Every structure is written in structure tokens, then in C-alpha cells.
Image (cartoon, rainbow, N blue to C red):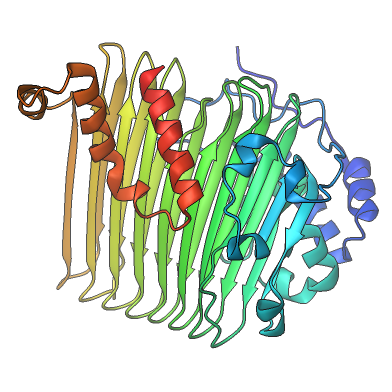
Length: 437
């Protein structure tokens, strides 16, 4: 028996929701068309993971109105720990369930034309710019039921825009807080960086309760135009019982560069897609991902770098730790299209299993349609290396502590890439808690 997938909202509801937020007509029409498609399209089909019984559509509340924060002092303590005092707090967005609860952007960046605002304000004040990028060339509405549902019921997120020849040296940080239990979050993030510009964007998803029945559907679209650079870091830390679909996708133009550092630490069932399309000649994509799975959760992570331009470089590094009776599937896809000569596609997937019932699969895939290219992959699934363990224990380190040191070293390549120290510290603490509990 499959979980009920009928969408509990109709066109009348969508019209009222859109009108209540003062959205332009083009966005309303996008929603209505997407709602129709969501009834018709199938669910995505992640490799080796059945999701037909997962709950992606049944929830009590599409919108919960929460009070904004008058100051950062009002934030919950776990959220405060993510935010560093100083320059970083001048470029900060906090979303409380569906409410834009706090927003700050430095005067300097405003003067340079940088936009950093919630998605609804962007629709009202920067509608033409948002329309150009929203679910057009990145993630398309009609890919499957979950992308269509996302477009129809979008209820949160941010819009980042960096004009030409502007370098944003201080990270822009967004924190999405899930407080209420039986809600749905359809969060959309768009990051657009114009020619010769750069930005660092860091986001955190965090639940304030240990268990929840929430449904989370996240889409992020990243655009690095000519000679632009985007560093996108994320730490997802949603509660046990939260069903999550997340799709983060990037498009790099000529000499554009997109780098991802993803700490995927959810405690509920999760399907994650991360795709980087290297469209322009000389473009570059690098994805680093760490995962810790525990309990009985089931997670599927697919990372792809697709080469279209000549002289492109794509790298995938995925390290996962699986314990208890959890299941984690890691799919890595490096694809070089015809015409993408002189390109280089490399990937590495490693899974460390800490218990007999844990299941981890690493599936590297290379799809090459061009000559004169370089490509390679490495994959492994196994237990803690007994030689490493013996070496540390021979130096007087107790076995449990030695295992933890090995695990932290195993996950370090992504942890060290996080550009905000408070977020890096939180990721380390989450890893420690999930490994030790």
C-alpha cells in the first residue's frame, strides 16, 4: 500500500495564497500550471531506493505565520550558535518556518547593487529578474511530481543577485528554522552571479525539535556567468521524521566556477540531487559532500557533473558514514557530452559502515561521448581500517576515541571547506553527536 499522494490544495487555494503575497501574474500562472502537472507527473526514481511510500504531500499546514525577530538576541540558542558576531551578521537572512524573520545586508553591498532578500520580496520588487531565472534553465517545473509540486506551493526561500564586477568577500548566510511539527516547507533559493563577480553563500536548515512530521522540498538554482565564481555551502540538520527532497543545481558559463560544500546531516528519510552543468568553455565544478546516517533512516544522494564546454573540469568527492540499520546510497555521475573535448571528469565516493546492519552503496558512473578527454573514478565501501585503528591504539589512544579520530579524518575534506567558523563548528558537533549516540 502506497502513501496517499493526492495534493491537498486546489487552484482556488493557490490563487488566494499568491494574491495574499502580492505576487505578479506570471508567478501565479507558473503556480497554476505546475499544480496541474503535479497531479499528472510521476515521482522521481532514485537508483536503488523506493520512495513511493514516503510522504511528500500530506501535511496539515502549508503556511504558518510566525513573529519576526526584533534582534538576534531572540533567536533560539542552537541558531545563535550558527551565527558569528561581526561582519557576518550584516549579511544575514533568517526564516522562521515560512516567515522572513530577520534580514540584514550591509550598506556597502547595497550600494554595489547586490540583492539579498526573501523570495516574495524579490517577486514584488525584482520580478523581471526573478522570472528570468526561476525554474527555467536550472531545475524545470515538469521534471517530475516533486519539482512541479515545489513550483505550485513554493512558500519560502531567498534571492541573491550580484551584478557584474562585484566581489562579495564576506559570506551571505541564510538560516532556515523548522519549528512547527506538521508543516511543509517548499523553499526556493536562487543565486545569480554576473560576469567577473564572486560570492560565498552559506545556508543552514535546522529543526528545533528532535522529531517532526514535516515535509521539506528544497530547490536551489545557482548561476555563475562568464568568469564568475560561486561558493555554495550548506549544512542540512532536519529532525527525525522529516521527509526531505532537496535539489541543488548549478550552471556555469565560460570560465565560470561553482564549488559546493554540503554537510547532509538530516535524521529523516532524504532524497538529494546535486547537479552541476558546465556549459561554457573552461568552466569548473567541484562538489564535496559528507553524510552521516543513523537509526533506520533511508537516504539517497545523487551527484552529477555534466560537461558541455571544452576544457571543463569537474570533481566529485563524497564521504559517508552509516551506522545502526541505516541505508545510504551514493550515486556519482560524471558525463562528458559530445564536443566537450579536453575536459576532465573525476570522482571519488567512500562509505564507512559502523555496524553489521548498516548498508552503504557507492556507485560511480562515467558517461563519455567525446574523445581526447580525461576521466577517472574511485569507490569503496567498508569498515574502519584495522591498520589505522591498531596504529592509534598502539600509541595509547583508547579504541573508541581512535575510531572517532578516524571518522573525523575521513569527513575532514568537506568540514574544512566550510567558510564560516561557527557553521563549521556546528557541523563538527552534529557529526560527533550522530556518531556517538
